[in-house]
Length: 458
Image (cartoon, rainbow, N blue to C red; front, side, top):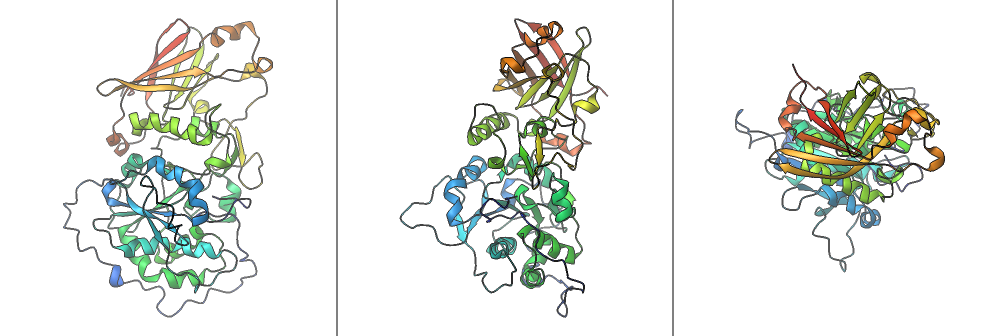
């Protein structure tokens, strides 16, 4: 979600509009709560239950952009957009410069319909962005099952997105996404709302209903600031609540995202947002280069990206945590699993930049280097055999004054690299009950610790 110090052209919320003082009910026009389908409420192309598995061709993206911001933000969409495969549009507030060719690597664009006739109290652009849902539906692309909304700085992991959406029947009314990570944002806006910067998905069944009533509904909620809050309010009128999927990430945090990404929940990574508002994910990388490094690993094994696994060396009293495709941590003491899967708090809240609270537990980062894990970052990942990968993580170089000088810490500091072998993870695994995979230490040789990730024994 874009903050108050960012240009507001976002699906996400920044401030809460002044609804205080509203002591009476909203005036609903006659028949406002009756949604019988209307001209867009049909699904004629659906033939019984023989629909087949949902795939990327069934997803239509609606990306909220603007002429002013697209030039600087398009590289985020171009990371995940696949020309001639991905479907959808980036919706702009005007026609781009005709003298500058539209990049072939970017999603095609459409110009939003006139939104100036709608009421608003503070953010007129939020009205335009909220209407992308209904405008996308009215485009009428064939065989669309899901409408997925995002910002021009939202990064989607499309294979995982499809894995999530495939669990649900698009003919039903589904509103899928996630809350903000910062409690202050959820309290200010709503725990029942999908925060737009992290992206959210609307089923065909719900989109058909929204298309018949959204314009009138937007005028009823003109005091709301953000487009995502308007959509939430209108979806609520239909009687649909949020279906939460933990892989959508609004990234309403400040500082270093490391702790959050190194302890990802047992869920497929679907999206990231606010990349420019936090530190780069990899040391000595730009924000864009960090994303490219993550995507190189993701392309090798999409379902496994950021999935965490633990193992222990009981002879040495070591604990190892691997967040596949990103980082590994080595602790010179035994750490229980319920601690390892709790994110290190390397970040602050979004709005007040305070130390919490968040919508998940965190563990404090001590200033004592002898109480910190040794951290390793992804160097490379490759497929070494059919369906098998090897990833390598190199030790982050600590500043001399921040390195632990205790003798018992020396054996851990001597480990320069952690290599991780594993079979590729199947997208079908996400149809099972979520369970963190297990791992084991293979050997320690020549300053390299070798680890194998595997399915846990029954």
